[in-house]
Length: 139
Image (tube, rainbow, N blue to C red):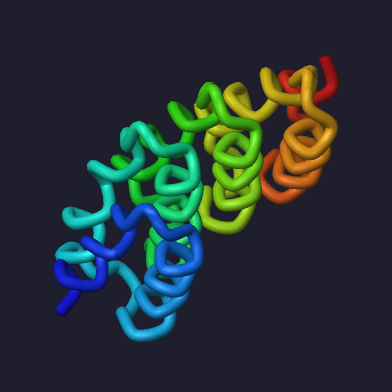
């Protein structure tokens, strides 16, 4: 069923994509590897809406600090689409381990993003994942 619902993310109708992402987040248990395997390739989809929704859907089920997802989300912080960058920043703030230096560095780079929504999400998420007196955040 996960693969069938995940396939709906590739539909050209945005509403269907959004509903599929919501259903996946609602019905799949946390850290479901089948869902991660089904959605991970969609983080690279040509459609920016599919990439954004894949980030959000995975964030709803990802285990805190899931190493491969942290790398994928950090990569999405460099996405061409600001909504995908914003979604990645918000999701990293929710699921990254506090003090994860790679995540902190990636978010720190987005504090100067050209889009205000991305900058705000990066700053908010830095507050969630950085350690007190973290030098890279203060710099």
